[in-house]
Image 1: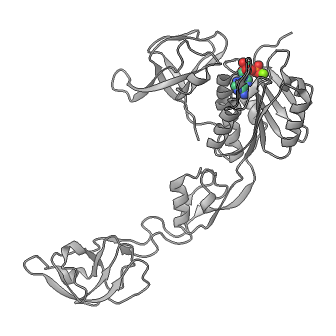
Image 2: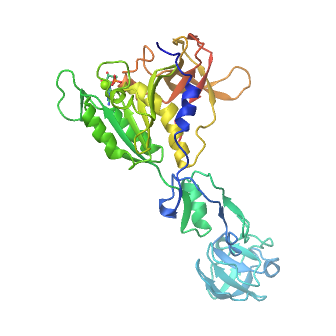
Image 3: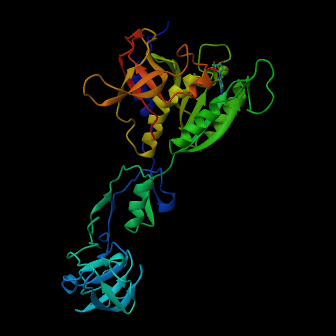
Length: 414
Ligand code: AMP
Ligand code: MG
């Protein structure tokens, strides 16, 4: 007897129970992007470290140039030249100035910088043609962060700007969660390597490439095993090779009720595994559990749209947890621009294209969506799937989406 399908949220809970954040490792800051911090980063010193010039010009005493004008320039003796990187500390006494470039420390005695454009650019004596407001064009020590301040909190996903912040406070390396290694394999005796000749009945394997690209863009390393035929021994050998060597195995195909559903055939009897029907469309048949040496495995259905949706709904949250992130992002709401039907009793994940649209009234602009594929949700329509920019999620009790209806929107996250 068939038990009732499992709700998507319940299945996701089961999936997430298989994973935990990976251990912390120290990585060079050059390799830190796309990792998640496992330890806070504090500034050991203030940033900027010294008062420094915001302009190319002359470090002066504002009092000296208070009366300067085009008609009556003030002449100052140039006592030093301070390019960026200069460690010199010439004392700027009354009647003197230091030529200074952007970023160079402001020398003692000086309190302001006159931009070169307001001078005759002299090198021995400079004629200053405008007064300086006290403190003008001086970047203050500590105005970015003060010594000891928290710069990046653990749990932060490091993108380019966060990497820059870590580097700026002098971190040569950072402590992050180890980057997950994920094995991806597809199953099916009909699958051939893309680019090789296809005979009747065969199709190019697209899922192992879809999943490999998805895993990689989700900040993980991928071991793309490729396509394995519907042969129990071949699949067992391929799984044994990955079990214990990776943090997660993701398979596609072979999990339905058919005669050649090899993933189910090989794994269904194992203690740590279960194969269930999830109340969703597409993506109903799902397998999950652990291989013999404990490596978690998610077995996705083979239809390409089903595999993609299953990745977004189950695999991506699991990868985020392995990386040290929260499983999901914030929900968004979108408005349907055209209607479509949805199966009763199953949460529908419709690949959609997006268009900005104004909500009626003065509300904020929200995305308008329409199915990416004419005729809706055929789970084999892999080329049409390439037009999709997001997934519209339709609740299980809705049988028809009408134009103007609100739907939940899932955009691919990092
Ligand atoms: P399955 O889940 O193995 O029954 O496969 C369902 C459908 O998806 C069949 O039409 C398969 O040919 C197709 N399919 C399975 N795996 C792949 C793959 N790796 N690439 C493209 N299509 C696939
Ligand atoms: Mg198959």
